[in-house]
Length: 218
Length: 237
Image (tube, rainbow over all chains, first blue to last red; front, side):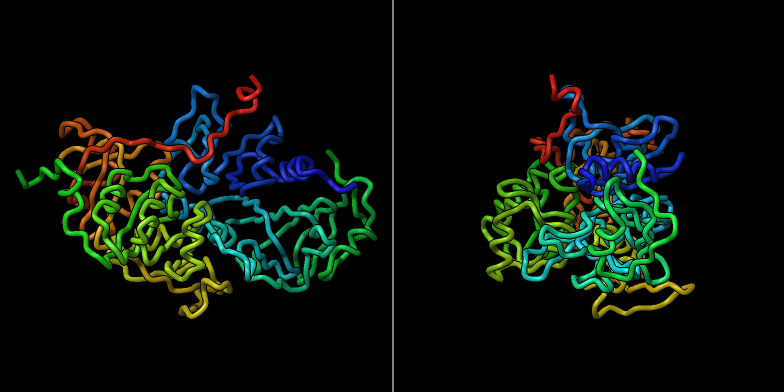
């Protein structure tokens, strides 16, 4: 069975290390904040200028001056700091954020990512995604392995305009966990009940299958 | 009184000198921390042909979206413009030009502009459509593109509290692009929630020193929330 959005988020949260500063993109990456292991402490960065993002507010806590990068109401966690957009992107571009997790339309086996623009459709903008992929130490992409027509999103070469080049380290899909290195996708884990053959058939780019592809543990 | 009393009493005085075809840099992130009254004044003045530099362009009927209603903006420099049907329509009609700029590059363009730095190298956008036509250079084995800084004829800024010198502080994430915008205007106008007596703000807590600020006006703010999301515990009640 392919993973649900929540299960992908749970698997993403397993990548969080104790003491990490992490930026989570909109969608599945943000859900991962709900599954941080109880024995570690992480600090979430929101690129509009908040380090130490807390949970959504209660009705009484709602404050129009307190939002996250998705323009949602939010709270500040204990130990948080708030700063300008320039300061926020200084931490991102300066390589101080340990981990960025974001969604994508396509990733290729050289670690290129396309996530912001589909020619012919209205272009809304890249927001902070280009800065994040150019700046973070470790970048994980979450997405479905194939689109709704069954076309692979893990390609030999991205077809859409890029967000960043040679920057993606790991991909967590509804079917598998893969590392990107040496010009290939390396299959590390498969979702419970998903066969290596299915992953192979839905991966268009070069796929290296190791001897010990383990099943994801939750 | 002039000197270091930068407080003006009317929005007309706050935006005096704004003319057609000028560049206006606006603070704010979405609808958070936007100079609502100064935007309303620009609408009232019917100034046309404006280049507006701001992370977003408001929403239909609020924030910078108001300036689209009478086609006052000819060009937007933004990182994300997705919340606005009128924007979309004017863009598709060719009435509006948009220069999409990565969010961190946009912040740095304002910061550099205000600091007298004409351009800077960044890895952001290399190898993407953003990097096309821009000078590229390798430093320590990594590729960077040259991005030019931005200054404006006006900067419109939302702050929380200011004194008459223009020293000001921002509140929570309403800070966002406001401090950089404040440095990058030939004329920088602050719209604030409250004017405080000089000395009431500690010198070490000032976010934007008054040297960057030309005019200050006290505003009334609606502070519209774009996406009100409550914790699941409270929304289940």
